[in-house]
Amino acid sequence: MSAALILGCLWVLASAVTAMLPMRAQMLPGLVLLAAAPMLLVWIGREHGWLWLAAGLFAFLSMFRRPLAYFARRALGRIPAELRE
Image 1 (cartoon, rainbow, N blue to C red):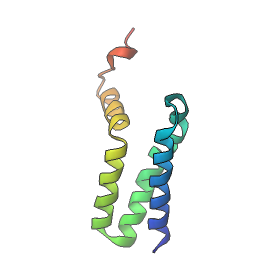
Image 2 (spheres, one colour):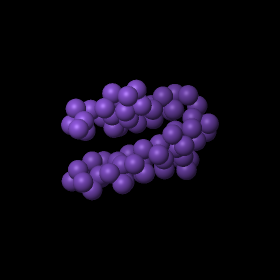
Image 3 (cartoon, rainbow, N blue to C red):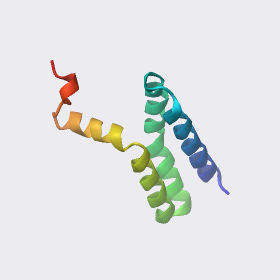
Image 4 (cartoon, helix red, strand yellow):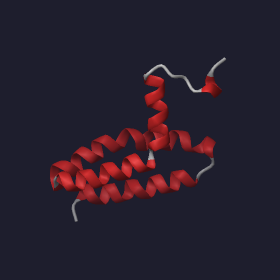
């Protein structure tokens, strides 16, 4: 097994551990995992092809669907109701 896939497996384990933390403690490790994911996915795709890239992308989108939806709404100018003042 290559280094890219081993690192991908470690990323999945780290994200599962992060999800078990209290919500206040999830922010920093979650942002680090969110930032590292695209680089890791590109590396996996370059070494193992588009099928492994698609599997990794599916896992990434599945685990980070809520934060990604939040950032998409913010980018489109739709501020969530709980943040409006």
